[in-house]
Image (cartoon, rainbow over all chains, first blue to last red; front, side):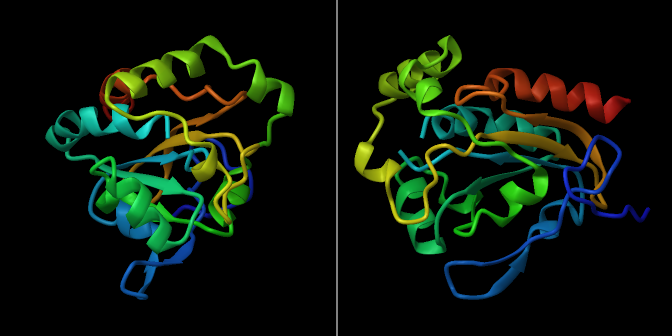
Length: 48
Length: 143
């Protein structure tokens, strides 16, 4: 199923895609988390 | 980090449910490895130094007052964190990529990317308790 990502998404929308660099400097995609099954994503506060 | 300790304790249940956990943090990969590694969670942390995903999800920022006068939920998380051997670190709070006012959030995402459940924090302690997350996952995966 294809779902369209949008700003300020709601339930039923696609979670926004993001690209990031891992510890080895490789480009990774957030969508790798849910590529093979469901994922629980938590956006944490600051490191303290 | 008030939530990583509690999330770590829920990993076995989430893995039984075949749900991958990803913890997005406000720092570079090196910073995430250093800080999250102290909690045994380095492999679960995803670096977002520019806070791009926070913005795309529409997470809000809080006020200084809400930080100083912590909510009961935030106090409870801090207490649990101290019991596990960790405490709030002012030094880490002000690491270069950290925005202390940025609020937390959580989402359960189906295979393919559709949001099944979404929570945007309204104050600094406003994340569902980690021990409730497996139940929420079960409920939403069944719907």
